[in-house]
Amino acid sequence: MKTLYSKFLWTTLFIMIGSAVTGFLLSNLYYQNELKPENDTKNTKIALQMAAYGETEKSLEDFLEHTASTGYQLYLFSEKEGKQYFGRSFNEHNLPASAVSRVIEGDIYHGMRDFPKETFVTGFFANELRNTVGVPLTYEGTRYALFMRPDIELLFNELHILLAWMVAAIVLLSLAAMLIWSGLIIHPIRKLTAAVNKVGEEGFGVYLKVTRKDEIGQLARRFNDMITRLGKLDEMRKSFVSNVSHDIRTPLSNIQGYSRLLENDNLPHAERQKYLAVIQEEAERMSALSSQLLTLSSLSPEEENIKKSPVDVSGQLKQLIRRYHWRIDEAGMSISYNLDEMICLGNEALLYTVWENLLTNAIKYNSTEGTISIQGTATADEINVSITDCGIGLSEEEQEQVFDRFYRADQARSRSVPGTGLGLSIVKEIIDLHDGSVHLHSEPGSGSTFLVTLPRL
Figure 1 (cartoon, rainbow, N blue to C red):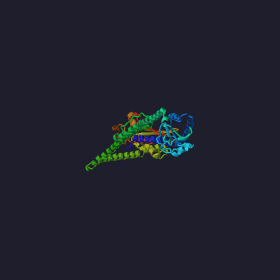
Figure 2: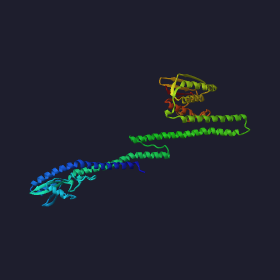
Figure 3: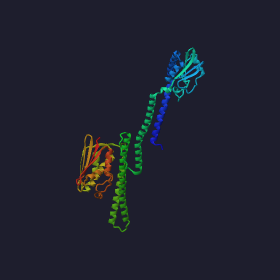
Figure 4: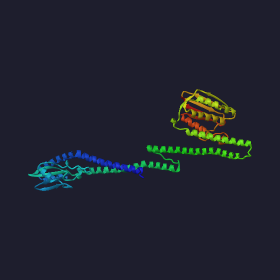
């Protein structure tokens, strides 16, 4: 498997090599089309001046020797004296005889200009006799052909060598820096990959140390946040499964046990009715649990999945009070209410579930002959609904967990009170979906007040 580091390395090397080749090809193209004719013209002028000076010198050979020592390669030919070379020798002596004859007769040879074009060879460095300029020269009545080109080796002096070393050093240092830099980039990604693998193997107890301020650091911080949230969700899932299993297993065990007792034909009628009542209560408990679970599963955090319309909250509360009035009277309690006209934008069925859960909660945990107060007020921007009972109340620790799923304050005390522990968590999720808030004010022994705030339509 190709790692990200190797891909990054090979891609960078490919870019560097490709850039170098492209740069060379473009430079060679520029030399062939622009610099080569100019170079030929410049060297032709130098050769003509050289020939003019040579014709007036006492010793042509001494003059050419001295000129060659200043950085030129020279070839002199005459039919009388033959070939003569001055300066560094040519690598290839491939000058056509016809070109020499034409120069002797007075023509100028433009070998630099007419040097063949090659894609990967720059003619400037070709040390060939045909890659020269040729001019006629007459000395003491003898006609010569003088061919000249600059000596490239002498042109590259100490400064050019220093520059070449500098370029090489820059390339090598850039390559080394690229390797180090890519390693610094890849290292946190490798750590992140290892952390992801560790999560898959060991769970959510993984945390990355983050010191970077760039996008990789931001990704690592997001990973830590995600792992934290997933850990909490996993704990909630385990707790949820455990609680659901317990709340289903307990009534099923009771139903199973009492059903076996009912198999006794000699069971007294009163005992039989008592056992049937227990079975019915446990069945109703399971039915309520199923209903609450279905309500929870239907709630979606996506607002567009909730159909909203204007809801008459005060009308819903009055309807609910009429519906449960008999139950309140039967328990020896009393209820009072004062409701302003309250309209909000929401889902009518879900909001009715909120008020019903809060009211039934107040009835279940209220004191004997206690009172329930429902107050509803409307301001310019919001509506506020408070439901207060005179029941057992809650401690600060209990208030922090009261909206958690399956939480029931003081399990021993609440065992005799029917319920699933899901009602208030459903209230919280529904209110959150309506961009509202729900708060609890309670003291042990002094009752509880639930305050719901919703945006007003």
